[in-house]
Length: 129
Length: 171
Image (cartoon, rainbow over all chains, first blue to last red; front, side):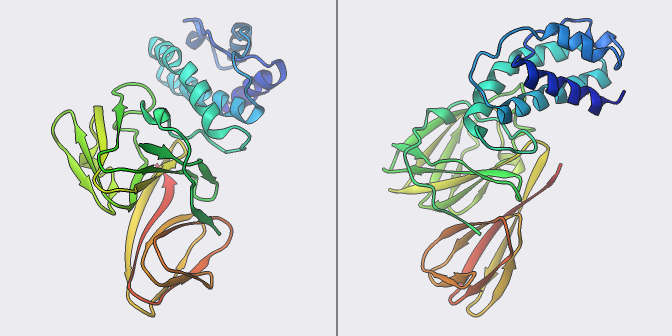
């Protein structure tokens, strides 16, 4: 089973069950790629805390999997857990505000702290051709 | 005060465009560039381009910069920690071109003389500074931002024009 297949299975699972993985046990990276979907799915029991649409879920899942993939390759379990724990809520909040209702192919850069303090009340005068 | 516009996603350019306008001289916003996580100085790949007025950005380490129709950050101008951006003129405005993950933006500047023309290709964001020019056969009299998303467009300079062009490539 390829990593892409693993990604697809987990993304499908998130879409189907309306849940989001918010906990990953330290033994995830010790499992083989073939075992990984079952392990991940078994851990994915926390309800999505926000009313996010499917496009946002896709972004979150993709972000998640990029982290998992990198650390699976590098076998850095602790770093993976720290990074996921530190970023998953930020991913939910920031991606939701940036991409709701839009089907984009990959996640975008995250906002700087302070950026969201600026009120959104001015016209954007971009001419799209 | 500083006010932000709506975000516009340009799929062909793999980026998001958002503008911020500062009404008065001295209006400011404090930002924090984190040192860890997904957005850090090393992963900060957006470009900020001034379309009106000018700005000064003060960093904690003292490496301050002033922006007037410039592209920021340059590689040596990305610092961790807090920094504050001030407007130096009324109604100053900048745009951020924020790429999707794993996309690197690169920029080019074109200086056109009267009667010169170039083709603006799909997947480019073009900041055009001039007082008389046309794009896709429509005439413009001031600075404008053009996102070329569906089909190429011809830019014809009727007077001298400067173009700052952003486009993306995988990093």
